[in-house]
Image 1 (spheres, rainbow, N blue to C red):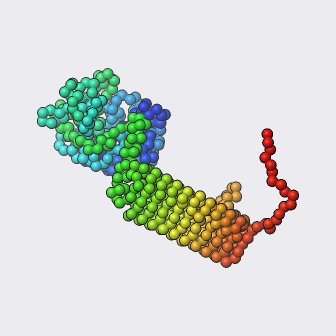
Image 2: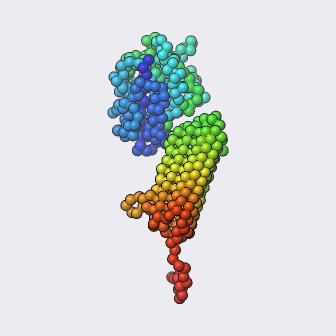
Image 3: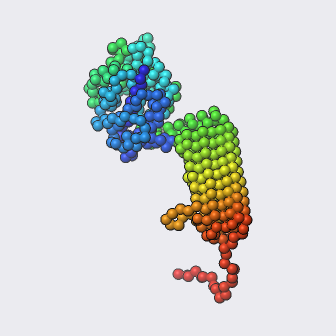
Amino acid sequence: MKLNVVILAAGKGTRMRSALPKVLHKIADKPLVEHVINTAQELNAGKVFGVFGHGGELVPSTLSHLEVTWVEQAEQLGTGHAVDQVSHLIDDGMVLVLYGDVPLITAPTLTALLELAAKPNSMGLLTAKLENPTGYGRIVRNDNNVVQKIVEQKDASDDELKIDEINTGILCADAKQLTKWLDNLENNNAQGEYYLTDIIEMAVNEGTTVQTHIVSELWEVEGVNSKTQLAELERKHQRNIADDLLVQGVTLKDPTRIDVRGSLSVGMDVEIDVNVIFEGNVVLGNNVSIAANCIIKNSTIADGSTIHPNSLIEESTVGKSCHIGPYARLRPETVLASKVRIGNFVEIKKANIADNSKVNHLSYVGDTNMGSNVNIGAGTITCNYDGANKHLTEIGNDVFIGSDSQLVAPVKIGDGATIGAGSTITKDVPKAKLALSRNTQSVVSGWKRPIKNNK
């Protein structure tokens, strides 16, 4: 049966105390509603609809990279009214209603609900059991344990208030049936709103069986209405990721201090220390070690490499058995071959560095092709920018660059060449030659060191 998913994302989120629409606030650097959309896509939904309101076009424009049909709810007249904005666009199949501020609902839970709803003459309702259900709508069942209705807290009798099974708001039903029930909703309540929950009693009165699935993990159905709740779900989401990494065999020094803001693929015997952040798509090979306080974004780290503390790697490729850091920065388009060493306070940008080369201390290498077995001395820089354009530095194999040298691009350093410390190289250096660029040392007579003026 065709599945249509309707995601309600029109809430203003006053308690967020932000001009940003609530559903665009982020968990793991992804908008809340995008998490829900991604889950809907895991269900192979035929079509995904989003209902937006507060924030206007900012919600659909922010999420324009996703296949969602957006419909505006110009007036916020309740959840039933919100779903009704979409119902005329759905002809047949099953309709699953989700919420853009309930980001951690999982595909397996929804699949179980859909299977129940697919039974003859049935609809599905996701419920939860709480030790303290105060404030939530209660699921009222008859003596045969069959759902009869949902009663809100303010309308519940003393016996109904004792019920610990509550409504999550997530439901699924036949499209034609749902449209009929929505057409019959009334707003004769204190808020003057059309409640989606009222369709439960309508369904029961028509002989439809309300099949319920009780969620096993409460965090799946927890919504975000404040920055406190946002932070709590962020940590829960990250702990879920950490637990999955542990199952895969990753050693995490502290599972509560890791952030994955994208996708992380890992090999065997990976070790990750505390406060490491992964962004975008990151791939770690076998026996990779990531020390504390590193940030790795859209990069691949090959087998056996070690990333020392406080290093930043962005859109780069690190080969096998490399050592990076501490305090190193690999900027976009950096490609390191095997056994390369990039040391403390070194910055590499748009450079290809071949096997066994070393840039160990306080250096900048940008727009460079570097051969194998090269040693770059401390304080060396490639001067790749002339104020208007970038230029290439080419360094051959087995080159030795002395400390505090400047290589002014475009320039080529031949295989086996040596650059004496403190040199400024502006011309190509032939193979196996020594290049120097220094003034003769002299002693200036009569010179006196400046003295600080006393005010």
